[in-house]
Image (tube, rainbow, N blue to C red):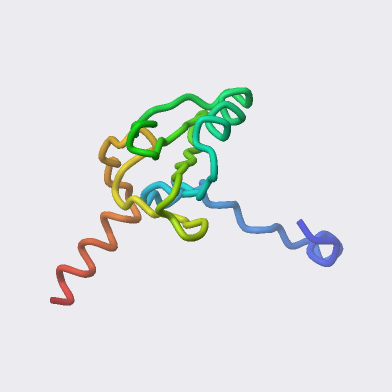
Length: 111
């Protein structure tokens, strides 16, 4: 309640329960590296573990919790940010949230 409301004897309206955040998908960072083995070793010391890719093919994806970093040797010109719509950090489909369901319904009714 603000000071002005308290002085005037006006109660603040009750707060609505927090809405579930909109879940659209996940992001990962792709980094070009000169030495994939050495770069991979650095991230593994920071508790990242390889979850995809192949060193022989010169790319790996490392993950720590919900954070993913892709390392590419020799074919990525600069750092990139990748968006993976509709999936969580494990690659599983996201459950449709209340907000995304209403967005989907709105887009269907507008068609």
